[in-house]
Image (cartoon, rainbow, N blue to C red; front, side, top):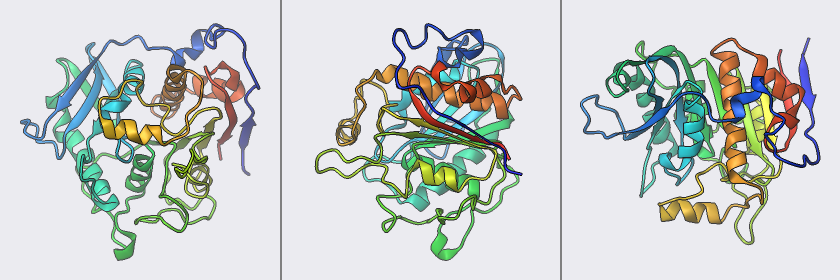
Length: 333
C-alpha cells in the first residue's frame, strides 16, 4: 500500500520568516558547530583525483560525510554559504572541482566523482582538522543542476549508457545511504539529453534502494528573455522525483530560480554569466540558501541519524521554512 503525504505552502507569511521557528526546527538556522574551509590540491600527499573544497566542523568528533557535485560551468566554491550551513549542523561536506575551462563530458565527470568517492575512505582522514574523523558508514550524496544528474547517476552505478557499462565495483568504495538532488537537470531538453540517459519516463524506475530527496525551483523551468530555461520540463526536478522509489521527498521552492542557492558574491565571471541568464526570485537569497540547507540537514538527520522530527515537521507544516515550499510531497512506501 502506498503511503504518501502532500502539503501545500502558504500564500504569504508576514514578518520575520524565522521568528516563529521553535527549537526543533533550527535546521534553518546556522548550526552549533564552528566550521573551517579546506582546499585540497591534486598535489596534496593524500592524492585526491581532483581538487577538492571541504567544509568541516573543527570540534573533536566523528561526523557523517556529504559528497556534493557542483552544477554545469559552476565552481564548487560558489556554494560556500550553503555548504557552511550544512556543515555547521555536524557534517563533513566534500565538493570536488570537476572541471574549469574547457569542461569535460558527463561520462568523465561521473567517473571522476566515483574516484572521489573511493578517495573518501583513504585520503579524507589526512586532510581533516585535528581530532576530526569521518563516519564513512554514514555517507550521503548530493548535487545541483548537472551535478544533480551526476549524483543520481553515481548512485545508480551508471556511466555510458551507449556502451551499457556500469561503474566498476570497488570494495574500497563506500556505500551511499541517502541521495539529495538540488534542482537536478538531465540535459537541455527531452530530445537533447547527453549520455548516460538515466531518465526513462517510467514512475519509480530508478534501480536503487536508498532514500531520495529532491528540491526543485519554481522558476527553473522558465526562460529569461532569449535564454532557454535552465531546468526545462521533462528533464528537471519533478521527473527525477517521479522516477525515484520511496522513501522519497519533493520540495519546490516556488518563488526562486535555478541558481538562487549560490553565494551572493561570485568571483568567477563565467559563474556570474551563468547566473545572469537564469530567472531569479526577488526574495532574499540568504533565505533560499537557509531553506535548501535546512531541508538537506533535516533529510540527513532522518536517514543518516534516525531522527525524523525535523523532516516530519517540515512536511507537516511547510510554513516553518523561511521561504514558500509549494508543494511538499513525502512518499514513504
